[in-house]
Length: 285
Image (cartoon, rainbow, N blue to C red; front, side):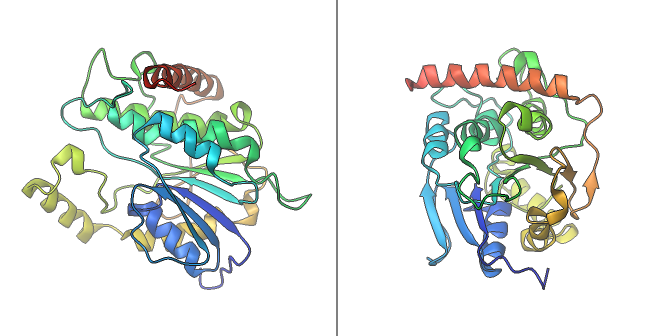
């Protein structure tokens, strides 16, 4: 890590204004990269190498706009980190999508659909393919419920969140065929103290504060994770290995059992149908 020089490299972090995305964006800036972050509120000081695009990524319509507006032609890496954890009671966005599904997966899918063909296309001829890194929990064995992606038939917080985990793994496994151009990789950071559990535990509640305090004592910080994983994002040895996944130490991990290419395509097809439904509800074209 201490030898990592990212001068001239370009990184876009969707969800880069908080949590792990923010930590990775800041570490990349310190290493000399040009960084674009997408999120609700920029919490860091302005920098000549930092670009901010404001967006509410609980809205699929907003995610489509982000995918269209992002200037990714010269990017090396697109990192998707937006995420929440489903609450104990089902919450729905104005577009009719279960909130965790909208934020943690469907918005990411919308961005990739709009941006993948342009990602890295303006770089020098002969450059290796640009990369999409998808943060979630690949390899944890979660296959989701492909017949109930929007958690309308049956709802529990864990099952709803499981659908987002499966969706993100599907994007890693089949992204190179469904949205060709870049290579796709998965990141499984494990449990780290961030704001992702606020909806589940009740933001600011005693349980929420106590849980995050214990997690902070027992696990690595977002900054430590960023220092471990940033070299992976730009590692030259990943060429030709689209679909690979990495654990909380940057170590290679195996995909979930049963998550083959056919199932990934099925999951993404159903997800795109749900995305189209959201855009119809929202009135977008």
